[in-house]
Every structure is written in C-alpha cells, then in structure tokens.
Length: 245
Image 1: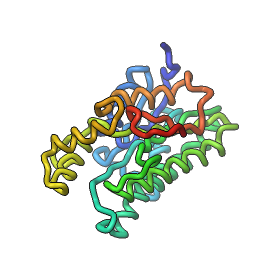
Image 2: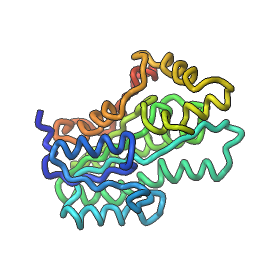
Image 3: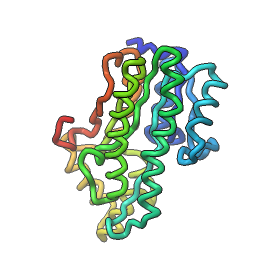
C-alpha cells in the first residue's frame, strides 16, 4: 500500500530511541525525509524557543514541512505525595508546552503549503489515570485535549491533528535497567519479572506492545490514507483501557 509519504518532510521528537526511533525508520522506509529531534541531537523541546527553531531547521534542510510527530516524553514511578512542584512543572513543560509550541509553529506553515499531518503520541494514562505517576497522567490528558483543540482550529485548512494513546510498550522506558519495571519492583519489594507479569495481566492481549506496532499507527495517521481522520485519539494499548473515546 502506497501511503503517499514519498518526499514528505517530517519532524519527529523523542527520536533517539523507542517509539520515536521506530517511527523515523518507518517514515524513511516510505520515502519520507526526517528531521530527528532529541536531546542527543542538540534539541530540547522544553526550551520556549524550540518550536520555531525546529520548524525553521526542517524547512531550511528540506524546503518544506509536511508532518510533525510530537513523541518526546518520559515518566517514572513516583507516589502522588512525593511529587514536587518541580516534578509537575517538568511533566507539563515536556508533554504540553513543548508540543503546543511545535504545533503553533508548524500548523500555519503547513496550511500555507496546502495541508499537513500532526500526530501527538499521548498515552492510555491520559484516558485512565495511573497513580504510578499522577503528573504524567494529568499532563497526558491535557495533551489529548490540546490535540483536539488544534484539530478543530486547523482542519478547515487541511492540517489534520490526531493523537495515539499507547499502553505499556516494550521500550527502554519500561525494560532498561532502572526503568519502570525496576522502579516499581523496588517500591513494592518484589522481583521485576513479577511487575512485568502483573502488567501483562492487565492487558487483554496478554503482552506488551512493540515499538514498531505503535510506529505503524503513527505513520498511517501521517499518511495520505488517513485523509478523513482528524481530532481522534487512537488507542494502541492491547485493549487495556475499556472505553471507546
């Protein structure tokens, strides 16, 4: 199936690993040009000037901007009463202000060129809050609302904005040493394999998602094949959140 992405210029944040890296690989496999954005490439999306700078860099390198994937994000296992004001602010800056500034910079340029695609990688925690990190859940819920606001504002100009809400995915965030599995295990005084087994038990499919599975949903929403989709929040969580929204 031709997704109509050949020659498209794309920005992907959080591109150095996990879902972001898989998304970059799949976009390139479809013939797209990709500007990878991460701290390792010298970009910090929480910088108030980052949105304009990143959009300008993409247009300078590739002469255009067709696709924006806001994927940068992180979480940790922190009890509600242990979250500081700084923790809340850091999550807000990363999951709300960073994507907002990028969309604010990108959407008008896309509209001027006849349209584009924006996909925000949110989380199932934005639909069903988790006490593992309340600040993460709350800011991901805000990112979902932000996605809908921009979708409504720009649909008539051909800029389609959607969200993807992954559940537990076998990325470094969960699986690496010191990742969520280890953090939860330390808090509960159990083995990390028990943590992973308990998490799998919450998922109707019985397993963690994969980076490529989430990336495939993202890339479809970036494509010409998704021309009638905007303002949606696509669950990609193995059925873990038992609601249809």
